Image (cartoon, rainbow, N blue to C red; front, side):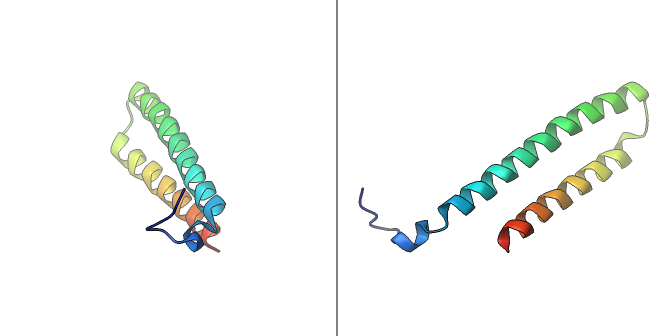
Length: 73
């Protein structure tokens, strides 16, 4: 394998990049599954879903931001 376009220095922190990507995917999947279950329960309860939807999305966005900032240090 010859890296013609990419220098070797670009692959130095490859594990950290992979770990960040995997963690982000796991967090994303968990929030999506949790949100789909949550929205189903909200449908059964018949509550105001838009407010709760916004709350859930904001908290998941905050979680993603926290994960990325913790890995950036």
